[in-house]
Every structure is written in C-alpha cells, then in structure tokens.
Amino acid sequence: MNAIYLLPLGSADRSIIAALGPQLERRFRASVAVHEKAVPIDSFTYVFGEAQLGGSVGVVSYYRLPNERYGLPANRTLFTERLLKEAMHELGHTFGLLHCRALDCAMHISTYVEDIDTKPAEFCRECEQKLILAESKP
Ligand SMILES: [Zn+2]
Ligand SMILES: [Zn+2]
Image (cartoon, rainbow, N blue to C red; front, side):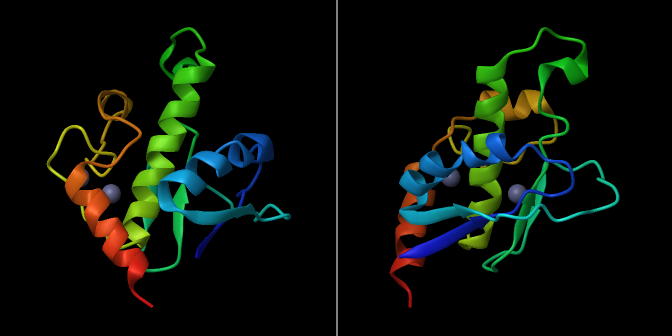
C-alpha cells in the first residue's frame, strides 16, 4: 500500500491539511499521515502546486484558494473542494499522471481558481486506469 505524507509548510493550518486525509486515502488507496512538525519556508510563489512527476514530493498552496482572496464571500465548502482537487492533481503527478485534456478530470491543468472550480474532485476513467497501473508496480 502506498503511503502519502502531508507536510504543513510555514504557518499552514494543520486542521485544513488533516481534513484532506480521508478523501486522499480513498482516491489513491493509500495510507495518509500528516507530518507532525510544520516545515518553515520563507515565501510562496504564485502556484497552486508543484510536484515531481513519478517522484515522491509534491507541494500544494492554499493561499490563493479562499474566495476572500478575490473579494468574494467566504465559502468553506468551495475552499475545501479546491484544496482537495489541487492535492489530488499534484499527488496524481507523483503517481506519474500527466496533464489531462478531459475537462471532467482532476488532472486537467488549472491556471486560475475558476479553472479549479470547473473540474471535479475525481479522475477521468483513463487517468484512474493509469493510477491503478502505477499502484500495481513494485
Ligand atoms: Zn499539473
Ligand atoms: Zn484524466
């Protein structure tokens, strides 16, 4: 079984990250643990996330995910959905998935927060198949 470790960076809210655990466990059929100590970093660049393709490390930033960043009313559900989609996207890369052209896929690329909202927190059938193949490799 694959293991996914979530590491809160800087002043990231540990509870927000911990809430991703069960969702990611189900979608990646992996054990998910939150690292106990926050990793200090100096600054964020404008990315929702980055990951090593087929590697073991990915990073997701929730800094630009809340509605309040765009002068809109707070929406916790939407925020949580966006974070889950981005975490799935970056983890998907670490499992070897590339960007997907399907609009109904978490591996579809997102440049703006609106792009995140238009895709589901699920992988398309093709990416799901690749994920299963990646998991069955030693
Ligand atoms: Zn990507
Ligand atoms: Zn896909």
